[in-house]
Image (cartoon, rainbow, N blue to C red):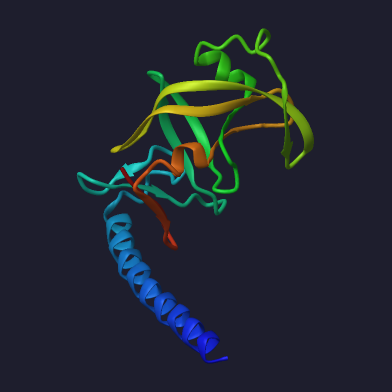
Amino acid sequence: MFKSAIVLGSAVFCAVLAGTGVLSLGQHATQADAAASETASALDDSTTTDTHITAIPKAKDGHFWANATVNTRAVRFLVDTGATVVALTPADAQRLGFDARTLTYDREVSTANGKTYAASVNLSVVGIGQSTVRNVDALVVRDGLTTSLLGMSYLGRLSRFEATPSSLILHP
């Protein structure tokens, strides 16, 4: 019982400490967002707030949309921390040089629209602002995906990322 109380107390202390840090970063991100032009839509390019981090503003729909450079081409992603890997639509895969018709769709995946199949591909480089990751695993989802998803095979390779009320902050 005493050990449980110590563990619980430590967990509460850590949660309060982490919350204080997130609030501090949230204030920094809010100030950076306030300086950005109001006329620029949150659905447009991600914004670099200093030389080391990239802030992706929250869109009016409540999601984070990132414009990335993938293998020298532009791809618009919905940031999805629930996606294990980067998931590409067949159209985006085609623009990146993958022939979506000849890929081997041998991985069963679950999407919001149900189960479908996907093909494994590798992205040489994925960059958003200052946050560039090389050799990123991805899937081309054959059916049911209306937009490409920026999943954890990219996000998990950053030193960290954090959500504030107004931005998703990427740390390379």
